[in-house]
Length: 166
Length: 287
Image (cartoon, rainbow over all chains, first blue to last red; front, side, top):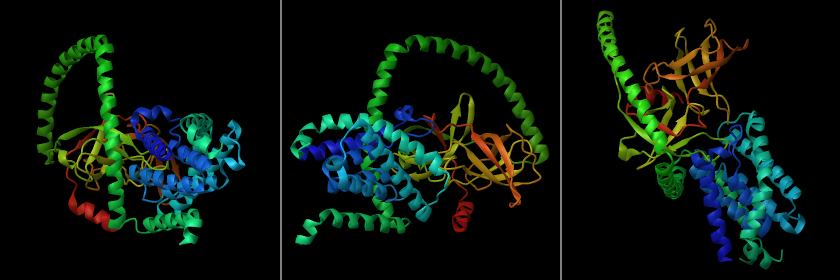
């Protein structure tokens, strides 16, 4: 299990650096970049259950808030909530096919975006145009990348998944 | 105890939820700020480390591949230098004439400021917020509210302002951020307005509170007004791409495409201009 923790921590940090560093600005399409950290969190919930999903979501969210100019908790809350909910169903309900992963990430990203928008509205500042300019494009972009990343993560966590019986 | 162990997922969920809500509610308190500081202190070494490795590899690679380009650039630079030497002489004359005319008009000399070159380490990792982290901090003389500019080709334009300073890094808020407030005016008509980001994830800015009598045309150049105590007057900001008048508002608005593109910016210059303390305090009180 210790390898799962180490690999997860490494994936979270690598995802955050890739999202923040200017050399990865090539990932932007129309100003939007994918939320790699979020895809990693969804994967953790999906593969290792709700407890692991929410803890990964919380740690990843705290790191994301720290690196971003957002108020602490604003990006954390949606991430651990989705980590928990996805983990609640996980692989025992959904099979990890390309289409399932695409739909899962699209819906999860939409819900994450809506929670963030509500939190922005209550605690920060929000505009309803964000649904079109941020939430939908990001959800689509995340969903598009997710099957490939899930495939890579499956290879990384191959032994751990075997132990879990998948 | 057995209940907590059996239902640890739900217990942890509730704890995390309360933590986030309390943190968001008291976001302006010292507790939240210090937690963010700790988080940033954890993340920054990884970002700086990665940046250092990437720079070294890029320089090593450039040494092999860019020798031919460097030779061409050197020749072009020499040509340009000759041209600029001639321009400098002409400029000297113009400056003298300008000083003389300013004296005649009894105007103050425009103050020249030093600047600190800074490289961007990272940009905000989220699509909802727009900040830039650079590799210069309080150790280099950077202070909060210092103006930041960038060069686009040969044009020098406003990029943003410093909002947070640590030992070796600073956080810059770009002019497309929705939380920035920047006093601007139209270069030609001199009508003033207040600029801020247009929307989350938009690369445009919006000027509000423009007098309805101002004639705004597409392509009109927008410069800093110098009001607000942070930016010097007359610095290039962007060009108007759209203007609209609302019947319900006594003012008109204009959408501006900034000269400095947030997605392409790599290097910036922090102007060593201490903000006008009284004005900044007043703005803080108003906010």
